Amino acid sequence: MALSDTLNFFAQDQLANFTQQAINGTQLFSVRITAAYDRNAISDISPFNICNVEFKVTDDIQEWECRATLEGQAYGVGVGLLVQSGSDIAANESKQFYITSAQLKLGYGRYRISVYAKRENIWYGG
Image 1: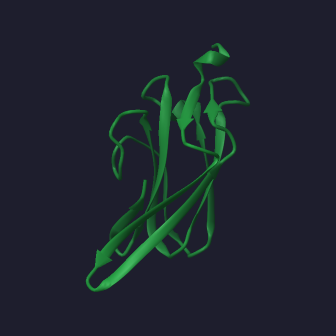
Image 2: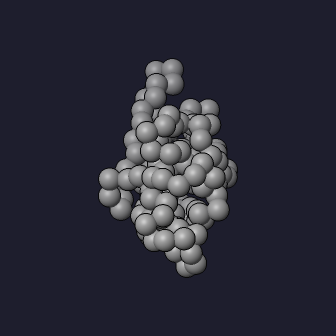
Image 3: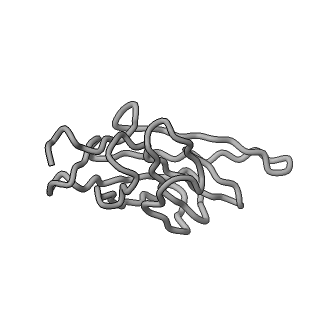
């Protein structure tokens, strides 16, 4: 596999901030997800086949998921490839995981990697 066949992550820069607000009754909640990763392209060749991802949330969350979609395709909670997920992260706690080239099964191309967090049954992020 040539280096030109790398799988590229879709992101504007190395650090992306995602904020979404939702209204729950009369209270306004906002969960901020700050995500960072250690490379913006991966391939099938080791050690370039793994990307480490770390994210932090501003509020306690019940559940989280990381999704991958090809650039230009629809994305959102429950859309695309589920590459990692988990539950119960405390406010300001960091979570680390990795994505491998083997997990990106939609073919070669640029992928959008999105992290979503659920608090009080409302999903945030993207």
